[in-house]
Length: 449
Image (cartoon, rainbow, N blue to C red; front, side, top):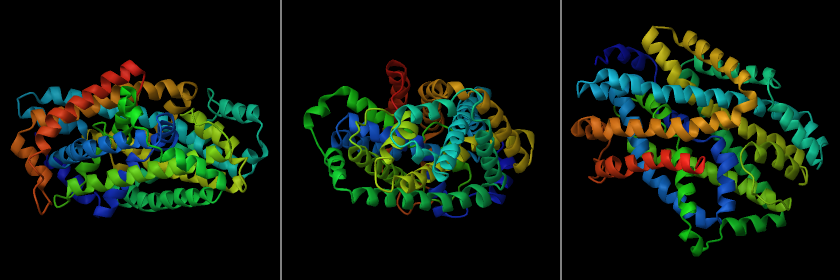
C-alpha cells in the first residue's frame, strides 16, 4: 500500500495546532445526541444514577476507541477506505479492507444527509425565533406541534435545507486549516459560552432548584437496572462520535508530534461538559415550566422546549440564544460527517478540494430534500447498524489486523511518556467486544444512543 500519494495532501492541508484539532474533534462529537437525548437519559434514569455509569463508559471509550481511530488515521494518512486496506494489506488481503472501508464512509455520508435535513429545521427555527413567531405561539401546544410537523414533512423545508447544505459546502471548500479548523475555533467557544449563559440565567429562577435536585439525585437501587447501564453505554459510545469515519479522517490530518491520548482525553472532557451544560439548561427549564422530561429526539427540541421557553420570563430571547447554540453544534457535526466522503473523492478521483466539497454537499442537499418525511427512520437505521459496525471494523483493523508494535508505536508518537501496557489488551478485547455489543443491543432495543 503506497501512502506517498496522500502525504502531499496532508502536508499542504491539515490541522495547524493542537487547539484546532481538539476543537474540531469536540465539534464532531458535540451533536444532537448531547442536546435532545442526553438530558432525557439523565431524567429518565435518575440523575446521578445515570451519570456515574455514563462517566465510566466515557473514560473507557475515550481511552481506547477514540485513541485507536485517531492513530489509525494518522498512521496511514488516509480515511477509512485506504486505512482499512493498509491494515489488511499486511495480511495479503488489501481488497477486503478496501471494501470494508466503504461501510463507515457510506455511514458517514448517510448520517450527514440526515443531519442536513435536521440542520434545515434548525435554520428555520432560528428564523422563527428571531422574527418572534415562536413566541407568538405562547402555550398553544397544538400550534407549536403543527409547526414542527409542517417543517419536518415531505418537501416542506426545501429552502432551509439548501441553506444548510450550501453553508456546509462553503466551510468545507476552504479545506482543513482555513475551513474546518477556523470554523470550529469560532463555533465551539461560542457554543459553550451560549450554553453556559443559558444555564446561569435559568439558574436564577427559584423553580430551577427542582431540576438541580433531580440531576444530583443518586439512587443506588437504580444502578441494579441493567437497562440503565445499557443506555449509559450507548449514550457514551455515540456521544464520542466513534464510528470508524470522522475520527479516522481527522486523525489522518494530524502531525506526527501530536499527543493523541492527551487529545482524546480533552475531547472526551469537553464533549461531556457540553452534554452536562445542555442538561443544566433543559432539565431546570422543564422544571420551571412544570413539564415532565420524558420525551426526547426532535420533539423535545422543536416542540416541548418551545412551550417551556414561552412560560419563562425572557423566553423569547432565550429561544434565540438556544437555537443559535444548536446551530453551532449542528454545523460542527455536519462538516465532520461530510469530511470522510469528501476526502474519499479527493483521494480516489483527483478532484480539487472545492470540487469534492461541491459534489458531496450537493448530493447531500438533494438526498436530504427527498428524505425529509423519514428522517427519524433514516437516522435510526444508520445509528443502530452502520455506526457501531464502522466502529467495530476500525477497532478490528487496529487491534487485530495491524502489527501490534506498529499500532502501539503510532499511539506513543508525540508523547513524553509511553501509554501504559493496559491500553492494547483493553482495546483489543474489551473495547472491540463493547463495539460488537453496541451493534447487537442497538438492534434488540431499537437504538441505545
